[in-house]
Image 1 (cartoon, rainbow, N blue to C red):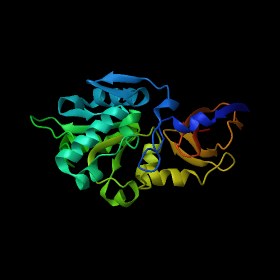
Image 2 (cartoon, rainbow, N blue to C red):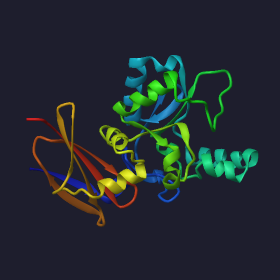
Image 3 (cartoon, one colour):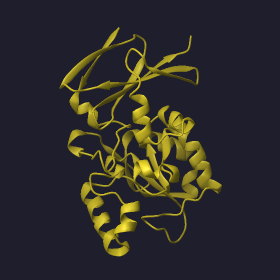
Length: 248
């Protein structure tokens, strides 16, 4: 067996953290460096997959990044400017308040079809052509279309075809297969524990996913030998462990 030490600060960092109007982002908990790519800064995990994704399919020829990482001050400025220009209802639907925006994590990316005039708040990213090709393939690289129309009552954000969120693989595939938004996915994973993990098989790999609550400052758990694992907080009350092993 191998031991893994978990700390309360782990709750607030990782590719699966939930950031919304209920669970706010606190940048003081993370030391993650943002990487510059196509004139925008992006969380290094998201950058690694996005760079591979864009290079393989040459998406940068037709698609541009409109927005990625934003500081809390930048988010505050955007929110206040939208209030002045568009009013409260529009802003409430499309712009998160400071500390409630996924953009502050560097894990969220807004895309747009390349054209002369691009709307910064609501860029054009249609459900056809190269944009739809990116949308369909994105799940293979750990990205999900974050805000869809049928989940608006849960996310409290209007439909945003341009807004993608990096959650990592295979979480993106599971979310798509089960039609879950990130809020629902956290509720789903909370059903599974160290002794009763959710098992997912893909690419000849067995992947075990489970939730570990963290109420104390430090907790030690034991994992099976010969497994590679990742830890991500949920930004609420615990962490999600993702462990891989090769199929026998």
